[in-house]
Length: 114
Image: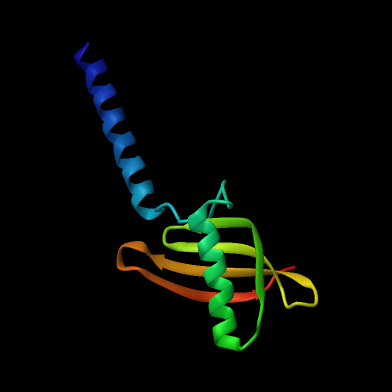
């Protein structure tokens, strides 16, 4: 019976070492999580900010229409926005970095989406 107990303990220890070495050599990678409620006020304000900041940087005069899809990864928001240049509506993709507690928002990029 002691041999059986030793075998179980050895197997448990070996399993723990294997799991630990796998976990440290392959840490989980971050990924985009879909925003379920893009109509949320905070998400809407992020999309409006992206359009306004793009206009400021480029001199364009896009007008925000709506956000139709969004993803979040930590402090980064990947937003799919519809906006118009007063001639036709077009789809755009923008990424906004936000540090809420420091009241920082930065437009990482804004481009035409397919």
